[in-house]
Length: 171
Image (cartoon, rainbow, N blue to C red; front, top):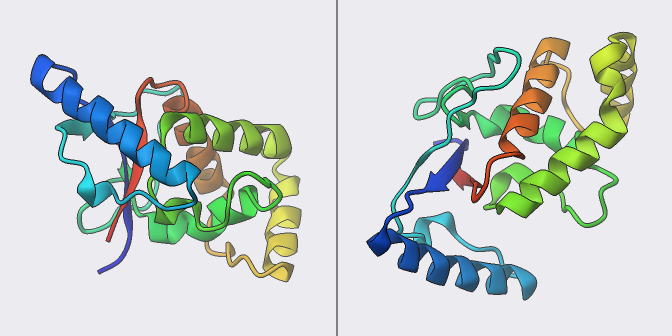
């Protein structure tokens, strides 16, 4: 089975909120100590975060994921693109889509992508150059279209503004 990714938000009710806070603190402590929290260890109730951004998006879905509009997408398809977009972000390590991320990390990732690749939004010729240079550096993004790259950025832009959001990988 491959890798699907989900943007999820915890359900906030009296019973669930205590679990959420407790597990969030534990997971953040793990992350600060260099360990990767496992999203499967979270047992608080949550739901997918639905995309309601400025532009409709259409990413590749998987067997258990959708095209990005319901907060899920086929992470395996976009992992090289994500790594290429974040390649020089020192505080964000390679393999971003292969682990669990908190809202502040999603904001940081999008801010970096937007700051360094905003030219994609206004200059389509940049995409060909970016694809070529990325391939030279070992990132295989040749099958991803400019439209998909823009959808990916739009998705991160939207979800970086959602409070208490997580990005989790499912295997």
